[in-house]
Image (cartoon, rainbow over all chains, first blue to last red; front, top):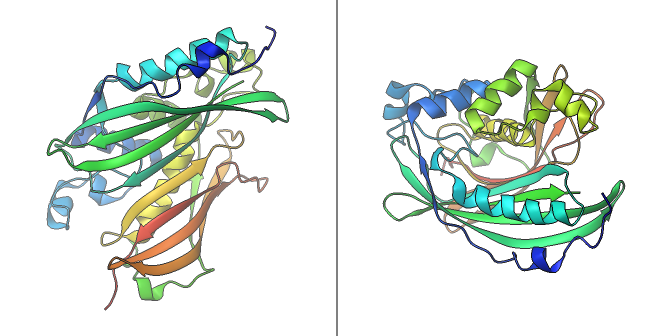
Length: 159
Length: 143
């Protein structure tokens, strides 16, 4: 596949695009499964008794876990469209470039989060193995009380 | 669990206790299930090699989650992980031990919170730091 300019008009038009909100349920079982996967024995993520006696009063999410999506077509739909346009431009290979998140409040089992995503920017750069594009998605998570809990940024690399 | 760390115990430049992870392909499967990242380069060797990779590779976000544990272990029940930023710079493979490390870069009191900033990273057996980043935490104070 020949590589033309990465930031085609079609790609540039997607900067600023927003998604339908995603809904995430925060459940004890999902938190425990996540803690098992990373092999984190922390009782705040696993032991209901201990979590209840802690300052949190309930099982909380490990850093970086924001629940399980009931619906995830919002953010995934956005990045899939960008990826499709970049594939057409000749940049089909996908890599996860990194994550950033800022936590404002604890996330407890039983919470329901609504996530609003936006394509914040799409840039390109020459790398060692050729041109790389960076798509930054910003997601804001709000809990069932309307409180801001997390602001996150993810970088998708297409090359 | 380790003893609770306090703001007064922390010095700029100190390294925090490191966290070793023996990553297996089974763990990559558990992570795929727990995170919803089913991209085949992480568990299907034929698929991974067809995309030009030497074999299955560790998910970037599994590495950043290990770094999350490095921080939540250190801050303890009374501390708070406020901000984490990790770049996925290079490939790491299952079957290799990954060590998560952190170093305090700054400490200061801001709006009544006792803030500690850190540099964090993963290190593979070759010493490559493929998931470098930074973090901000708040610690309890002895007053």
